[in-house]
Amino acid sequence: MRALAAMVSVLCLASVAACDQLATVVGEGLSSSQSETAVSFRATVVGVSDGDTITVLDATNQQHKIRLAEIDAPERGQPWGDRSKQALSALVFGKMVSVQQTDTDRYGRVVARVFGDGQDVNRAMVKDGHAWAYRRYLTDQTLLATEARARGERSGLWSMSDAQTVPPWEWRQGVRVAQAQLDRRAASVELRERSSAPPVQSLLSPAEEPADAPSLSSGSFTCSGKRYCRQMSSCEEAHYYLQVCGVSSLDGNSDGEPCEMLCGTAG
Image (cartoon, rainbow, N blue to C red; front, side):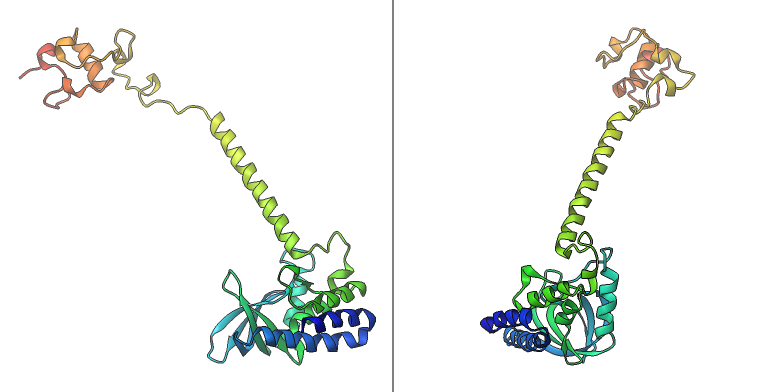
């Protein structure tokens, strides 16, 4: 079957008329041989996400997300992305199709060749210039010849300039690189803003202290490690150590008055 696919690739280059018919036969043969042990079912297409992804509803009313195998269509936001989606919708939306699964991708989607109205939908998207042959996952080499013919005839997306016809896998890589650069720039800006921000003012700074306690912030006292009333030189110093330095041991009964013997407030 591989040798036959290679022969079809050569014939496609030599005979345009015979290419589509032969390639479709070989494509169906490859798909059948790949899916002998895989799931194959019929379903109605109820949604089209983009040029290579559809949603189908099977006979049990269960939905399946289908990623068309071996092709890669322009992404949304990429040149020709919307037109590729429209082209796939025109081919399959609302129609009964045959889904021949070849794999399951990392997103849980069924990867499959899809056939409807007597044609290979995957191949039709490449043939009409709405998708690329997906080199990374390609097993049906005849799709390369189909793509080359679409390119030569300037069909679909191939009618655009070379600058616009960027393969989707390269486009996605470019988007990821650009997003990473934006993330790094945002992190750098945030770091600069944090480093240049003014320091947070202490709750105990002079600007925030009560107006009726100016003596507690005067230069006559400092928090020098005193912890006992016997170390205090005055009631004022005791108040300073309790309120400013936080030495709670000076207020044995927790009434807010330090060193009651010293301050003359003992009951």
